[in-house]
View 1 (cartoon, rainbow, N blue to C red):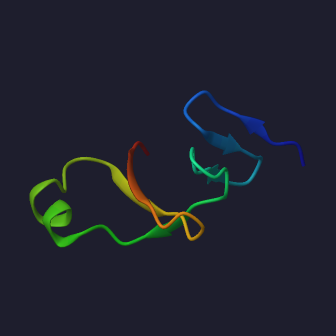
View 2 (view 1 turned 30 degrees about the horizontal axis):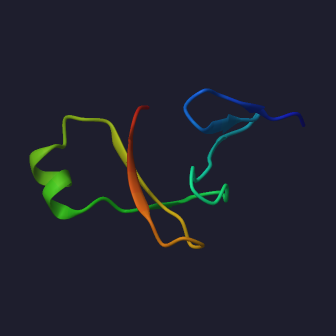
Length: 63
């Protein structure tokens, strides 16, 4: 299975999207959004990811 890297740091394979950390280049894990984001920004398609190597979290806007 060949993976292609997109311009926004994502890797796309045939079966799923993989999000890569821009700092340490490790695959990010999907985590639950904060309650503020769930309640007040629920109309935005935000996804929260966490890097276990550099301990950073980030939100990504998208499907």
